[in-house]
Structures are given as C-alpha cells and as structure tokens.
Image 1 (cartoon, rainbow, N blue to C red):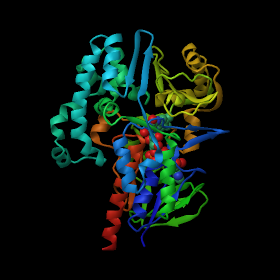
Image 2 (image 1 turned 30 degrees about the vertical axis):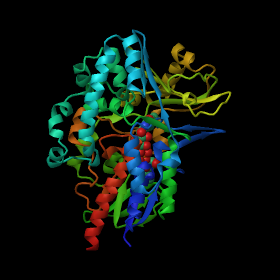
Image 3 (image 1 turned 90 degrees about the vertical axis):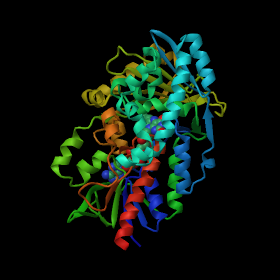
Length: 471
Ligand SMILES: Cc1cc2nc3c(=O)[nH]c(=O)nc-3n(C[C@H](O)[C@H](O)[C@H](O)COP(=O)(O)OP(=O)(O)OC[C@H]3O[C@@H](n4cnc5c(N)ncnc54)[C@H](O)[C@@H]3O)c2cc1C
C-alpha cells in the first residue's frame, strides 16, 4: 500500500485524507494542536458551545457535493435554513436588511431605500446567470484557458476583470447599499475596491440555494469529517507538529516532527497555511519565495465569545459599519439565539466580531489588539445589541495564530482581484515532486465548503501521481 502523510487536520486536510484512504492509500494526519477541525472547530466554554471561526454556510450546494464524495450524509448536520440573514447598520443611512426571500428583501429596500430594491432584483438575476456559468471553474485552483472556454466563462471576462466596487457601482447602488451587498469583503478586513468581482455572486447564493447553520453549529461539519476520517481508517495524530518536510533529490519523502521523529511517506499533502508550507516547511527556491512573501494576508480579526440575555428574533447576523474608524471599520454580532431552532434559555451564546486588516493587526501587536477589542466592546452600539454581555473568552490575531498555527497570524492570502484572476496556490507544489497542498490557500474561495472541495481536488492530484508511480 502507498503511504500519504497529511500535515494539518483542518477541514481541507481531513477531506484530503478521506479521499486518499478511499483510493487505497494508507494515510496519517499530523495535527499540531490537541484537536481536529482547525479554524472550523468548536469552542467549548463550560456548558456552552460556540463556533470558534465560521458561523454561516453560504454554499450548501458545494457542501453537499463534498459530503457526497466523502461518503458522509449531509442529513447528519441537521441544516437549519436562515431566513432573516443579516442587517447592515451605519450612522448615515437606514439599516439594510437581507432575507433569504428576494421578494421580502426587495420590499424592505423599496420602503427604506426607494429605487434600490428594484435595482437589486435585476442585479441578483444577472449574478445568478454568471454564477451558473462560472460554477465549473470552482473545481480547479488554476483554471486553464481551455477550462475557461469550456465553461463559457470568456463571455464573463469583463465581469471577472472588474473589482467588486466596480461591479456594485455599475448596478447603480448607493454607497450604503454597495457596502451592505459587499459585506463579505468587509468581514475579510478589505475595502470593496480591492476585492474580486466574484464576491458579488454571494447574493445569488443567499436568494438561490439559501444559507444554513447546522443545529449544533458550523463546527458540526468538521466533526462529521473527523469521524468519517476515523471510519475509513485514517490514522489521526494530534499534538504532532511538523517541523519540516523532508525533501531528497527534489522529491518529498516524509516529514520530521518538532520532537525529531521522522515519518516516511510516498506523498506529502499539506493543509498547513499555503505560505507556511512553502516558506517555512519546504525548501522552495528563493525566486519563488519573494513573490509568495509579498502576498497580502487576511487576518482572523477580533472576537469575544460570551452570554447575553438578549434573545429577541431579528437577523442572525447584525453588522455595523463605521467607515470613519480606519483601524476597525466593521463590527458584527453573531446571534445563534435568533435562529428558528434555537433552544429556549435564559442566557444565549453570542459572539462579537471585529475584522481587522492584517497590516493593522501586525502594527497593533497582541496588547494593542486586546485594547482595541476592549474599546469596541464598550461602544454604545455593541452594548445595545448585547445587553449584560458576560465575556467567556476572546481571540485576537495573536491568539488565533498560536492556537491554530497560522502563518504570521493570518488565515491565508487575502483574495484580491489580482490574486483571484491569477488563481490560488496550485495543489501541486512546483519544483518538489510528491508534495501537494490543500485548504483555503488553494481554492478561489475560502469558505468551509471550498476547503472541503480543495481537499478532494488536491487528493485527486496526489492519487493520480501515486497511480503513475504504481504503474
Ligand atoms: C473568524 C472566522 C470566521 C469565518 N467565517 C466563516 C463562515 O462564516 N463561513 C465559512 O464557510 N467559512 C468561514 N471561515 C473560513 C473557514 O473557517 C476556513 O477557511 C477553513 O476552516 C480553513 O480550513 P483549512 O483546512 O484550509 O485550514 P485550517 O482550519 O487553518 O487548518 C489547518 C490545520 O493545520 C494545522 N497545522 C498548521 N501547521 C501545522 C504543522 N506545522 N504541523 C501540523 N499541523 C499544522 C493547524 O493546527 C490547523 O488545524 C471563517 C474563518 C474565521 C477565522
């Protein structure tokens, strides 16, 4: 039997490990931390369970496809459809509400932002058409010109070449509406002008297949994948941090752990951050290193997890934009208690999030990050949204980095328009045979579903290489 060594037990690495085991490969996953699931794992604080990172699933179609390929029943997740999805508030404009129902959204906007609702309806119809045409491109990290022609994507080249800001301006949206539609780039700590146009496709997903949260939270996804990995015989090793990938004569031969233990393998697949893999673990040529080191990064931002007595219905996600605050222009309150299936209780798990640009996080350092979170938690808007908030835990970029072994405390390269057009980091590492990458750096999207799919594609490439060896 051929042997594969997977570095990192995030959703991307776990997905790759299952896909390889399904192809008769003996797989070991080495995970640095004492738990699996990476950024998508749960945070258990006393009797209360929180989602540490992800809070919403915006791509149920991709998730279902990935689960089917991995042999996991999606029903086990007990997905709960979110109808009152989000609101974006700001000082200078009425709130902008987003419902799963397009009709309800248009109606609310026509009342609060006359004229914008009808423009939104036309915009969603156009984005739905483009999304359908571009879906095949999600199956590869770097679509070739031939793949673009086959998918009929060339017709949409002008769309792909624009920034998100330009797509939203062409739709005729006011600045408040454009910011609200493009909120998913604000949560990445990035302005609309630098974000890639495909983020404009999110409304097509919200009003099409819809968005969901599993009954036990998004961490149920990583738990289902971890259980499946055990079931198919993957050897899962926690507290096994890889110090380097052993490369001999240009070929990966295994890894060495920080303890000095060496593990041999026929192929190595890394789910550690793409830049960690290439700049810290593998001997990549200096020429390639400079370009990689210059990529702009995405910070996981600030988060406080706690209990609140506020339980009224309303939107699951409440955003506030503060454009005049250059350091932290966005806040978000995540309210699982607002979901239809939330159990009745006196206090409710609630998360307060403030995205940060990576350069701001680095400049502030751990102490400054903590002080900024304190200041945000004391803001009247936040206090109004979460009455008597009792904080149980917090995360700032420095602590995310430590807990999840992140490259320079970042999640991955941030998705700029230029990087999106060039594709992501390829699954096959250039210049090192038998070394592959999976996870958020290798897919033109960074959601949980995309990371699962990236694991499948990376495993497919690695298995094809092993088949060549077998032959
Ligand atoms: C605050 C926040 C909010 C988010 N919100 C959403 C959302 O709402 N919806 C959504 O779909 N997605 C969301 N995401 C994104 C999503 O969670 C991630 O993109 C995804 O979980 C990444 O999975 P991964 O497998 O690529 O990487 P990771 O989860 O980072 O896994 C990599 C694993 O590798 C391990 N590792 C690293 N280096 C080593 C080493 N040297 N040796 C051994 N192990 C190592 C790490 O410990 C980690 O477990 C969010 C993320 C964050 C942080």
